[in-house]
Length: 262
Image 1 (cartoon, rainbow, N blue to C red):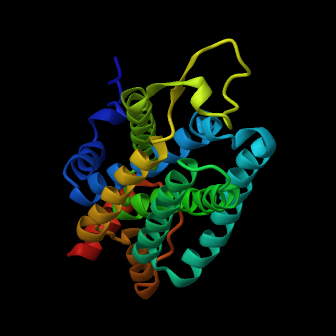
Image 2 (image 1 turned 180 degrees about the vertical axis):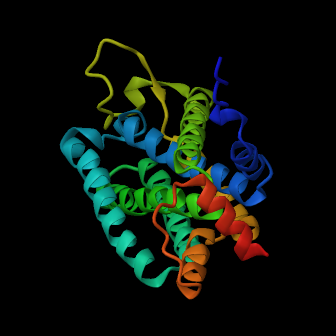
């Protein structure tokens, strides 16, 4: 009987990719930072009614909150994709977007603790959408660059799994910081129309998320490592007059990377 061809999972390339994935401090740091950014965007975009309604922000401007985050996010992705491709400065742009996103969440936390600060609520949500989505976009691109020629699907899947993990952590924080307050003490609230004596206060939630993001921004400043391996390979390929037909070819990528390193 003819021999059964060996499985791709037994090939050397998958073990090399596994070593890159498991033993890359640069990738691990980026997974954590990306998880914080994605989790915060996901969480604050979905649960804005919980932390805004107590001081009366939702009633008149509810359609604008989601609109600002969505449109701001699209604008941020488009704008920073052009800037990053033009200047090739991933590290500085990533840090700047993450820091401004963190600051916008802190501004949101300050505004929701007060009444009649609608302008700052709208401003912070718009900034949060622009720089939050830009951070997510740049984070994916930078992680793929760092561990090239590892498969992009594995890297992207790990990043988004980290994001949903931090989303769950933020949900857990929501139930830690909540407190019951007397309804009649909040005349501006739009959480309930009546029939209850107590309501749950989540107004400190953006402040807590902002604090976590500020810690993440400090870690980025100290520990973030960025490698542009794909760009380096393509640059060397041009110098060596090698045509890179497919960056997904594991044999070519592995041989080419070893030839450059040597």
